[in-house]
Length: 339
Image 1 (cartoon, rainbow, N blue to C red):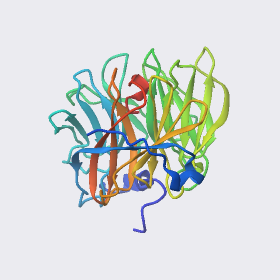
Image 2 (image 1 turned 30 degrees about the vertical axis):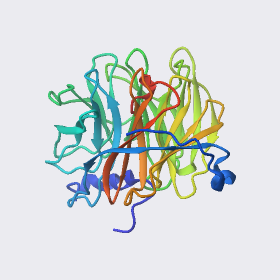
Image 3 (image 1 turned 90 degrees about the horizontal axis):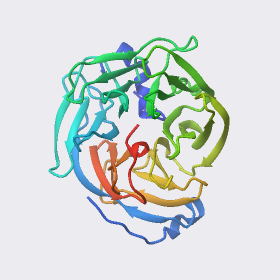
Image 4 (image 1 turned 120 degrees about the horizontal axis):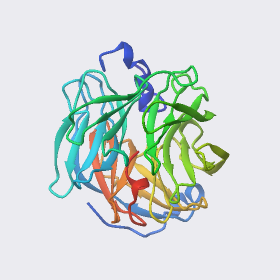
């Protein structure tokens, strides 16, 4: 195989035919990068623990979807874990221990979120176009949604729940072909009806509601931009525009989260860092993994502890899969919790 495509998940487009073959802040200005990122500050992330190593069967590991459960533990998925290895892990971030929650022989799970409707853990299966759910302890797996939407199979990446428990899914359809067929799909809380809210997006990846649930922030990986979808009262899209253009260099926009002040935390695929913006598009900070950390290539996602500022981001690469922590700019809320 040639080098990993533009998104590690692009590998998963063909998986259907395979078997799945700690914390402080540095407030110095990043002057050397001022031309490309503005006069933002650098926040130094600190290693919490290593969760995974590169799997021999798949040739990689990719951590995603960190989300806090009611038990206070952090749940994390490993997108490329083969059968028999943990595909969902439960992490005690204080004790720095982890244990397997779920594995199977089929799913390639790219995100995790707890539903406000039933408290179950929902996972997107990118490779098979499905959304599945589990009890918090990993038992009782169910297929919540499967099948085509408007005649096309999904490649569901991330999830955002509204207050009623309806799902808003980023569909990265077209990624492997390099075409702008990405969509945002709304699935009602019972899994019976799916509606396309937006289409012709550039490999839709991250998705999160804003603080007031008035609209959705959407990251488009192959155009390195964050779009904003204003929603009307019935859940449809009232308007859509490009909100932020991310100067990522070789890195691309991955998952996205929002804190209690409405700040956006944009994960980067291709660089172990996150870009932080306010709701008006001003770049506030760059979260960096120390340069001494080798073999790490992407910081895909983040969860900020509910009611606190302790943030945990998933970082992966040839060196393995890790959790890193930093102080967020504001407290964590539901929109800060994975996706």
